[in-house]
Amino acid sequence: MNKLVGVVGVLVVGLSVATPSASAQDDELSTLKARKLASPFLARVTWHLDYDLALADAARSGRLIFAYFTRSYAP
Amino acid sequence: MPCEEIERGAFDTPEFAAWSAAYVLFAHITTQVKGDKHPDLLRQKGGLGPPYVAMLDARGSVVGKLQETRDVAGFTAMAAKAAVCAAELATLATAAAAGDVAARRRLFVRRLELGAYATMDDANADLAGFDDADRAAIDQPLYDFSVRLRIDAIGSKRDSAACGKAFALEIRAGRTFKGDLQRLQSYWVFAAEHARSTEDVLVAERAVAAIDELLPANEHARQFTAQLRAEIAVWKGRK
Image 1 (cartoon, chains in turn blue, cyan):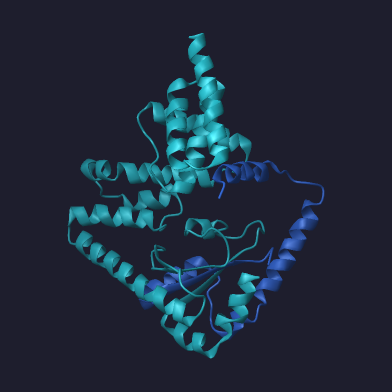
Image 2 (cartoon, each protein chain N blue to C red):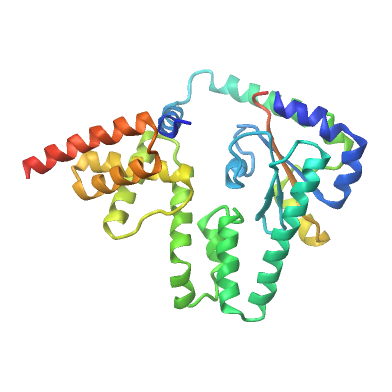
């Protein structure tokens, strides 16, 4: 993997600035988030969606945390 | 679509529902929605991209990462390794609480390594009670953590330039980052770019040597260091 290109990629992404359609983009991201939160897998068993609450539950119960990281804005 | 595969596959089985009862389930959704808490948690916990599955202890230390199949058998194997790591941390915590200075230092470093701290303030909170000898013993891991935080916070070319300047100054002061490979590359590239802008021979030569060692077979890296070497020769010729 070309890590130097990766570094440059980070810079290019970072140079992006707000555009006139930023508000529409925010709305779209919120819609996608709501859609993700409605995913069936989240309803089959009880998942914490708040990191701090998950930590508190683990401290209280003595259980380890099974953490699943996903995203809503892309497949 | 790997996320959908695991969500509609392993997570959607009675076997998972039964297995998962022994754990606290936490789903982190990176949304890019402004105001969301912990937007960078995936990276902080060692993930390169979703889907990422890990086991955490109650302090947020990453005690296991899924390296097996994305099914209950894989989760079980991960959890077994996580239990060993969590037990190690618990043993250290018990010894530290009993006054074992070496255990206290080791515990702090392990937590740093395992992503328990999100900020320097988080880490500093655990440093309360550390004396000068303790702090000297953890100096390098703590410096590495500070570099990691700064690199991860970069969001613009201005940020990277500021980091490069700081890293160059720190290299000149005798401090160098000794963290993970990915951030090491960023660290030396940013320092090199600052050295290039200031014609800093010492830092540029250190960066060339480090990048050559890190990426011996990378063509882009080879071109980068060859160009920098040529520039260093010009700077030296002018002095």
